[in-house]
Length: 76
Image (cartoon, helix red, strand yellow):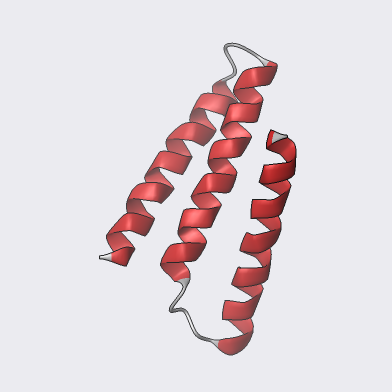
């Protein structure tokens, strides 16, 4: 189920990024970063479920938290 959500969020991120590149309108960049953070967070959770001490899982969760912080700063 988590893999399905990760794929859905990844597709949304790619479509939104392509839309912003084609139109040169970067007004939705904060939302793109927020969706990217969710996708990275799901990747980290999936990696942690595979292996209990997976370094890549913890690294993905840390990266997702950083992306959340940046996207929230961009919203305000």
